[in-house]
Length: 603
Image 1 (cartoon, rainbow, N blue to C red):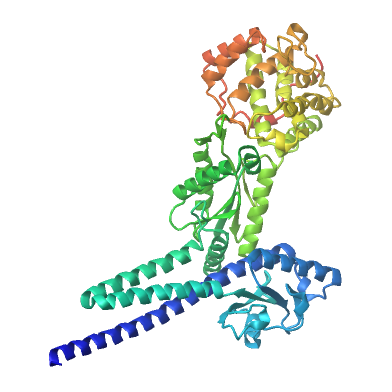
Image 2: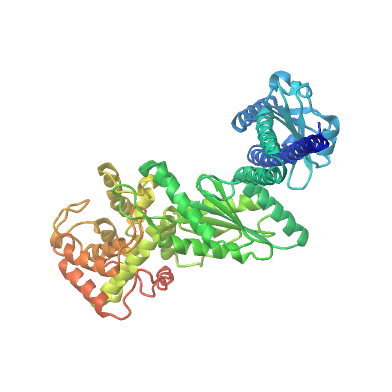
């Protein structure tokens, strides 16, 4: 054999050895990074999961006291359910001395595979996680390799009240790593046959591809597949990190929880695909509106979270305001439905005013958004906001209390009632009515829908047309409103407007089926104003129409549904009066809350 072939063989052999060495080194490095990433992601997820479960189910100081048998059984059952939902093999809660408090494996309650050093470190507030081989963790209930985590359970005052040990099956992650490693070795082996520079090129390309896959794998575990935003665990972890940064710097931090209004009814009425499309549209707007430096995520099935950068608390409030403005231009249709509006309610909380921990901020914002939704939705509430209610005369306080009751039931109904009152006073002035009659119109407009406090939310906020049975339920609001206001003093004429404003000129209205002049004068005026407001206001089941279109439809209803004389007067006044009230004009609404100097007395 000549020296050149021998040299080539030796070079090629050395090359193969080098490639083999590189392959081994690469497998070790990828394995180390992969294991670290899996452990970090798993610990972050489980820590957030355990923390949220503990906040929701364990009362402060409860673990420091002796648990009753019944309470312990209840909490053990919850731990078992938590482990089943999260795909966890075993969960244990132990006190600082190592005594077992709660477990998802009651049959093996006294033995524990927890490492003593890891338990001691967790008592000091440190998180521990490691990968156990098949022989190291059989007592955890896993036949093969396992991921063992030891997590401190910390109360708001910073005290470690328990140590939580979690075991997960590590085999799926190891199988994935093994498959990845085999792919690398195959690529390198084939490249070695090609030799030289070609092999180096293939190796580098494969290495870059593996890095991208690894990064994509880690990132995909942090993203919500529907919205593309951070998922719940990643968002909460991000909030915790930002909170610690703000706390150390003594800087304020703001957070907003944003909830899509009527989402449950939307899903029930139009299907989950419709709900998903609405969530994607809201997520798209949030992504487009949030400036750099903010953290956004999907917090719940119909909730989103926005966390601002430290020192810029006004950014989150501005994002919520811009989102609500942007949604006013959004209309969705499903099947044969009308154009439906999309609105959101939001709760804002800020550190340090709303709490001393990240969990406090989430709790405060959650309460605020719940209050916003309870009051009808399409509302933003701050966790620390306090509303001062002025003291008024006893009669008007009772009336205002009724309107507040409507507001707490449904914001739309309150805004609609305020608009009807404005339009009624406006029309009454053009009809040359006296001050006392104008006051009757104003109060009747504010109270004409007070009976809707008795209508179920599932009907009142339904994002679709009502069926016959639901329509009959809604029609009863005039009778209920009459019952509510009948005992207030000096309101006989107002009461007539409340009960009869849905009667029709042709006798086909409700509930009394009165016709023509049989309908009280005040009710016929309210009917015109009520119809105009209903058409020019966005409802849960359709978007609003323009003023011109609404006036045209009023004209079409004259002589059948409405009194033609009052329709003509209202349309003419709206078209010819420079200061005619507009559906978008809210400047007059606050004045409607103040008691008129004119006393209310029966005509």
